[in-house]
Image (cartoon, rainbow, N blue to C red; front, top):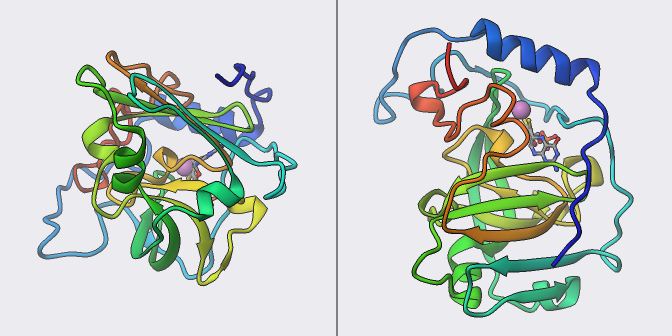
Length: 221
Ligand SMILES: Nc1nc2c(c(=O)[nH]1)N[C@H]1C(S)=C(S)[C@@H](COP(=O)(O)O)O[C@H]1N2
Ligand SMILES: [Mo]
């Protein structure tokens, strides 16, 4: 088990994002249909890749990185980077949709798919939720079905090169069908639970699920 870590003190951006949740900022009230459209409602396309986090960059090398998979699983895992890299590799291309309204198309990821991770740790019958724990003290929660999405993965590379530290390297989660705050950077532990446990943004006014197509930005607005 990894020890719990406090998130860093609120930055200006964190305080703004809490205010946006209270105000319902960026909500358009439109519901787009995925078949018709690639850009979800209220989003705009960006070519660069913004960096968004709590303002604390963990100092993590591939050598020091560990992944702890625990909780309601038959086979708890504790991998170093070499063990992680020795698992089945997947290459996925997906779009990013951040709740602060930027989207970025065609991101190329390499890593371990969530479904291969699930096959390795074998969640027990009662496991229905997943909490991701990160090395900056960040957490986020997912229903196990969302974590298991066919294009979700634990990514170590982007565009064929090791993921930059600022974007969550050595390893981050990528869950393309939900807003990007669900995609935990600097992944440290994956905890399987019978009961849901809302994470950092989910207790600060952000939606528990975060579907961009139905604008699940905030918990109430
Ligand atoms: N560990 C960690 N993961 C995180 C965050 C964070 O603060 N800490 N921020 C989330 C948010 S709000 C977004 S939009 C994306 C941003 O990822 P990027 O900086 O690679 O664009 O990371 C998500 N994952
Ligand atoms: Mo975000």
